[in-house]
Length: 293
Image (tube, rainbow, N blue to C red; front, side, top):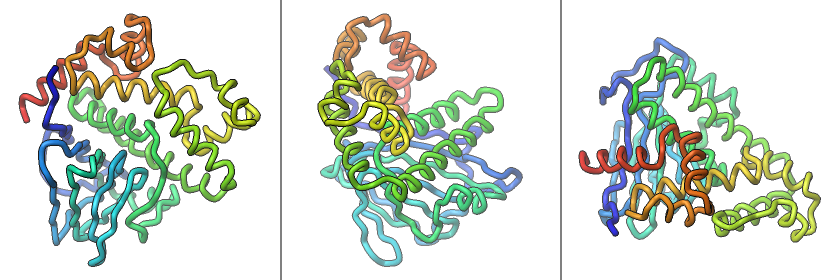
């Protein structure tokens, strides 16, 4: 079995690393990436003058250490960090923290108005939005589209960034709308699903075991996470399958079984439907990327 020590995925608009700000459109994604700290003891970013564009980072798991206004803040999973143009950037990821972070750089002539529309407060650099495979899914889609460079892909990735803004806005509104009991039940369910995603889960039986109305639970879960319980479990399965395809040499049948599917052909069709390529093609693409790094 092999394990990939480098875990970086990054893609740029028009395959260019230029930092020139383009304000010809309302919202433009210039780059997007994912970093999992594995083969280095620490990864440090120190940019006293910042950048000319906006940056949004999402901590999917683990934690990061950010220095904002001279104060160190430990930022755990489920938080986003937003940097404004020209704002100093200094942060550290440690291997011991098992950090998995996604980021996107963006610009445009209506960015400030768009963020305000989605209730994203620019005065707060750090905002808790919760953990959800939906965020990782959308970041992964943006990275993929930037890499493939198909016609009008720039418009698609801008729409996907707006989708992320929508999820953030919903998380903000849900935090105000739902009682602590609702949040605790959904948090408990998310933990349970993450732990048991590869087993057969009946949402109705789960709701009953918690003494909840099935309809109430599904509605609450969807309002808070943006996905139904079944969609959430599906995305967990696909996301973990991606990780196994990238980081191990298990066969496709073995991976299908590991993420909860006894029929490898059904798993392959489902994977292709949501990722846009078969498990075999996905592994081949990721192997090529790792060889280039």
